[in-house]
Length: 296
Image 1 (cartoon, helix red, strand yellow):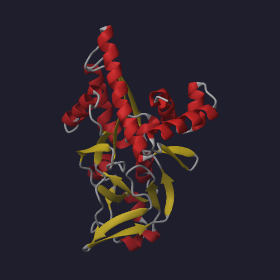
Image 2 (image 1 turned 180 degrees about the horizontal axis):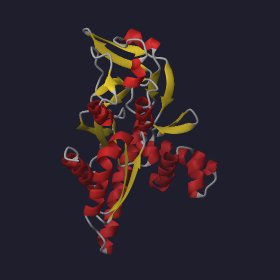
Image 3 (image 1 turned 90 degrees about the vertical axis):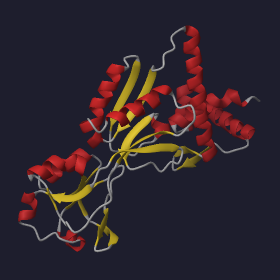
């Protein structure tokens, strides 16, 4: 059996994340999808997907096959466009996701400027603070806090972004002193549960050593803008980044606490697939963001 016949099954399973989802997308019975996927794995001699909780995830050979197929399909699209006379260096669609804080302040305007430069492009732009799953969600480029854990992706630092432990002056006025990590037990701690955030384990460095301080949250959010507003409203103490709160620090609406202690940076990275023959639309978009991010 020619394995090419079952590659559409493999791609559908990857994008849907489940056999049932792929079956719905392809209008096939789930048992048929499962049999053809297993047939492809037997033909290739490797396991391509594995079950994680209730969903399917790619193995390392599966990831390699997926990224190679993306290149092949992109080349196929270019060939069709060339023959039909519609070929252009910068066309097609591009799906981009950005963390909220840098998305609102820097990336949103750059996406608009890029779109005006390349009107043939169909650009989907999303902003969220959740972990990015490139394969499942179909993203081409992500701008997030911190580099990815997936070694198949390329990550290039865009913005150096220090992090601070802060609170509103009104909150601190009638509260116990907040000079050291031990003092945090007497305070309402606001926690960001998001991509690149420290959550309830705050890595504080001071006096020549770093310790992970386990805080007891009074409020938790997965949205950096919500955390920002909670801090301004005087609901507690929390960790936020320079990009998010610099105007508030300068105006005195928020102040740094535990000034003898430092946090790791919450630097922003631009992330994309680390494969050969990167589509020109992805490469040009990444270069545009890198060239213009500082002046934005």
